[in-house]
Image (tube, rainbow, N blue to C red; front, top):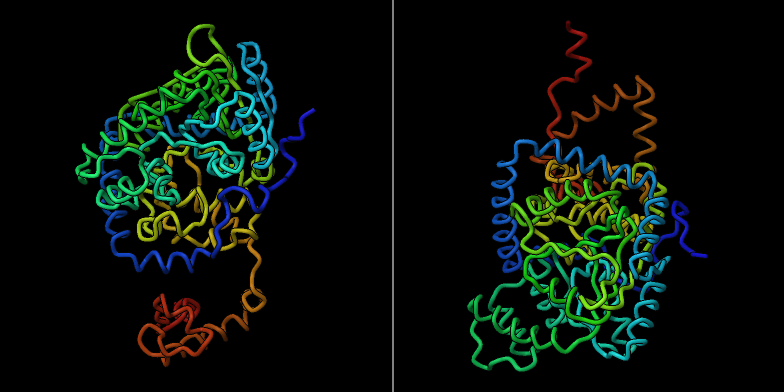
Length: 476
């Protein structure tokens, strides 16, 4: 019997993993805005990715039809998720793999630690591991005396720098090459003391370190971009070749996958393999697309374990509006067009999932009260919705979640008063006339007294019109 019951809300446990920040978004964002180097790094990177992505998307005449297809497939998956997961489990098992069900981060970490211990290995190599960052697997492995090694270059930089990812696609987007050189000199074993900050030199240093690690490590931990229920096939897409090494060289492969990553058939996978590279890296196809089905004697890992993770996803699934956040294919397109993310970076969100998608996914996984400031980390400009390859209506979700956030008593009283005024025509007309007095507060409303001055400290108060609509209408 599994303890994971899809559709019964159970949020991700506190105290484990990286879904909750230590401070609210406004506090963290204010500090990030003061970092000029961070803003330059982010501005350059997101501008470059946006332009590249826009170019290859423009080449596809049926891009909007592909987006609609991707959205429809994801809607179908969520409508019959238990059935598809059971089918996936049966196919993986039939192909020689072992499927484990994890209700939350604690269960998933315990499963992986026990599996690694059973091999006798004291080190694992990792690839495509955002979900393992979500559950804090590295910390759990280290506590058990097992050394995890990130093999993606950007994630390796983050790990060696004792840092946290700042972007879904480019975790080290907040670092420049001079900073990366210092990290390598300080933390990479066997690095040349004469290392320069030339990109080709830095890449070569990482390659030498990683190749030795690949060839001497018998256990790998991966995430998964997709899982095909029809055949039990898992898929990882990446651009450096490190994934191919992790998925073929070790004797044991352990994949940790969020339950929403399943797709019904190979035909469905075809849609996402067209959407993902163009929306994420601005490429026509992925440089490396690795797929495996169970165990093949004499070829690749001889032991395969699939850990299916809930960790709050049932709580998201239970919300008829909020569940569309589970459509996400982790392309990062919404981050690259978001004016808020571009200025604050990912650390301000306090979660492994930053940017617009993080602002709607993290609060649902943890419970809105634990991430109450994130639904407000947006201007509601809608650029994220336009960019999303699976048409997640992030602005709608932001508004939906803002309604669930615990509101201060004063704010609730003000909203109740406004609602009462709007429900009484005479009172509403009097309020409109009174609004014209705002001209006395000076240009942009900077003369408002506290606590109203908190609004105009960062916004311009709209100038009241010379006459109301009702007055204009009455003249006609």
